[in-house]
Picture 1 (spheres, rainbow, N blue to C red):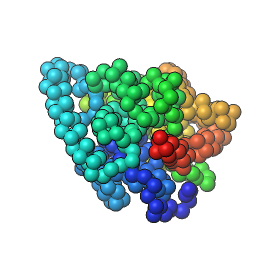
Picture 2 (cartoon, rainbow, N blue to C red):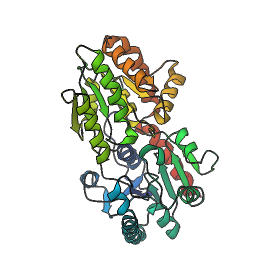
Picture 3 (cartoon, rainbow, N blue to C red):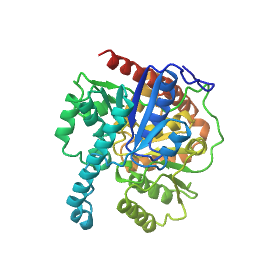
Picture 4 (tube, rainbow, N blue to C red):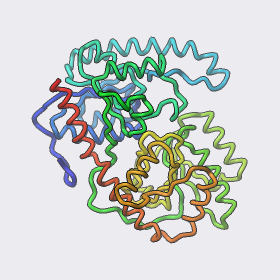
Length: 402
């Protein structure tokens, strides 16, 4: 296992694993997690093969790494959105179109599976069913990596239904990997024999926490959509701005995932005269450097699957303010269990978040040093690529034996 210097790729191929990614967005937490995982699994003898839905973003990254990758157009196994009159009118045509695209994708993926003969098919999220179906057709072990709440996170509905998808999880999958205890329980897999909990790897082990001089700005890092809760943050931020003589600006790093929601966000900003204080950065590649310099990262996600950006910030010595819910809550509890102290500042509503913003604004950065140190020790012990790769490789080997 490597931790400092670059790893040498294993010359002995123990198994071939086909990975199906739901998106080619480079900044997706699910994509970051699987790429870090696969890089280490390759050193352990896994030959990776990838299927992605288009030739954008991550497709190009995979090609540059000389990994075998195929672009097969497909749609996620969820119903189209129904917000707005236009969306409602187009709902049935979109479902039919989605079905047609995925039937063609199934045939193509089946061809690729027969040609490449993978030992395992590993689908990287719960919102793609194609890998599981093809695995059943070809009698190949399948892993469903369940990273999201689905309905809670993003207001989505599994296609054809929650009941049928979760029945398939229990029946068809060789193994379900859930990224938190809460995710496993939410997906009705708490008592399932084929469900394992493996926390995401976020970073390579680090020798010490980065100590970078902080700059005067707050940071939000995530997609602009309802589930990620930017509206919660802005409501608290507006009250904070009205309470402070010299409020810090808020940097928003993330792509727009829901246009109507983004429009409402900008209306709120206009209404509360925050245009000169909220900076939209778009998709940011070097997010770790921005985290290192931020006064604090705010995670207002309503139902965070794992809390990838929180852990990422803790690796980078960034103070975190997090909504005490779902994955974020579980990571905070893990920190208390491990160190005996809080590793982030929790809030349960906008009023509490406003108070925290004011408190952190008025305090010296040194006040939070011990919390940052405990947070770093926690994530550096629990959420490394090494730990995740070891756990997933153990599951692969168990599957191969059977």
